Every structure is written in C-alpha cells, then in structure tokens.
Amino acid sequence: MRLIRTIKQMQDLTSKLHRQGRIIGFVPTMGALHEGHLSLMRAARKRCDAVVVSLFVNPTQFGPNEDYARYPRDARGDAVLCRREKVDLLFMPTAEAVYPEGHDTQIRVGRIGEVLEGALRPGHFSGVATVVAKLFQMIQPDVAFFGQKDYQQTVVIRQLVRDLNFPVKIVACPTVRENDGLAMSSRNRYLSMEERRAARILFKALQKGKALLQQGERDATTVQEEMTRLIRQEPMAKIDYVSVGHPETLEDVSRIEGPVILLLAVWIGKTRLIDNALVKL
Picture (spheres, one colour):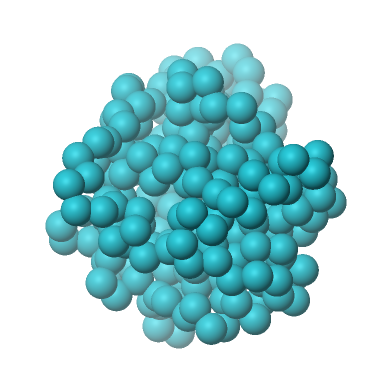
C-alpha cells in the first residue's frame, strides 16, 4: 500500500493505472474506520483491479455548531486497517490542499439535497457534493463505493454523477450492523454505555415499520406514527425526523403502493444518529 498526500501524485498514479487498463475502485471516507468501511473496501477489491481509499474529514459538510473539531480521527489505526484490506493507494490530503486559498466554488444539488438531512443541516450536501466532485477529479475512479447507511447521501451522489456526467459507476453497499442491530458509524464512539444501549431504539423502530408493511399496512402516516411512538418510549432519544418516503425522490408518500425507504434521524444524548431501511413489497 502506498500513502499519498499530494493531489498531483494521486493524479499521476491513477493516470498510470488507467494507461495500464486497470479498473480503479474508490472508497471515500472521513476515517475513524469501522467494519462498514472495510466492507466497502472488500467490495471494491472484488470488482476492481486497484483500490483507492481516501481519508479526509471534510470541513465544508459540517455546520458551524457541528462536530468537525471533535470528529474522531485515527490516521495511524486507519492506515493499518487499509493495509490489512490490501488497499493499493491511501489518499490523505490536507484541508489546505483540497481547499486552497481563494477556493470559492460550491456545488448545489437541488431539491434532493434540501429535504430531511439537508433541511436540518443547511449546506451539508453542498459540502458533500463539492468534495466528492473534487475527489472524483483527483482520483478518476471507474467505480465508487458508498454505504447505504447514508442513504440520502448516496441519492445525492447519484444525482451529482448524472447531472455532471461523471464517468463513475456508483455502488451502494448494505449497511453493516452490530449484533444488536445498531448501524455501524464513526459517531458511535461518542456514546456512553448507557447511550449505546438506548441507541438500539433506532433499529427497533425500523423493524417495527418494516413489520407493519409486511403485515399489509399501507397507510404511511400509520407506519410513521407507530415508529415515532416506539422511539419516544426511550427517554434518551430525541427525534429529528421519521420519514416514510419514495426510494428515489425521498418525498413523503401517503398511500404505500411500492418500495419505500424508512429514514430516521435521532439524537441519543448529544450524539445524532441516522439509519434507514429499504422495504420492497
């Protein structure tokens, strides 16, 4: 595995790989790696000739009162995990390299980035789209791998790729969960033992919604209300949203007649967690 820190070196190496006819798989991360990230690397290894992983905590996707400064960072431990997964190139640029002095361009992805997470975190998806577009230009991947836990983010990236004609195939990989169902997330590190137990309510709520649908419930409001009621039984939980939406547009549905995406954002103490379940009927 080679550790790359400069954009020019990254571009030179991936250009060489392309000249050799090798298919490049890319896994963008913000570090603090866990099994969910590693599953993306394994998926990339199976499908591609060379695997590139980026470690970059992107400042532009954090709001002024969010956790950019304290976001978990473990570059040395992350590098060990990447080497174990036989990553070819580990890209660790600085914020100054990605956003040099005078940088003043942002990408806005439209309505899909302004609902749910976008409504509660203004500017978040503009920051995500901008950094992903920049990383695509730096790395020139053929295939990029994202986790389905960040479902709306994946929808946003697909929109970005379609609208700006990036020659990149987007692959969404299944959410990796702990034994009790909690979706793996770097932010799980913030949780105390008591909060960690309370966080199981997210998965339980998704299971409740899925069970209702499988039992024949077709009124979206009923499903949303039952999921909400269950979460509110947990004293440590505070709901940002519970949504029953269309899998592609994320718009709320009223009568369920096909696949739906159940989306949650819930605070457990001072930690904000998101999760989802795609239900195909």
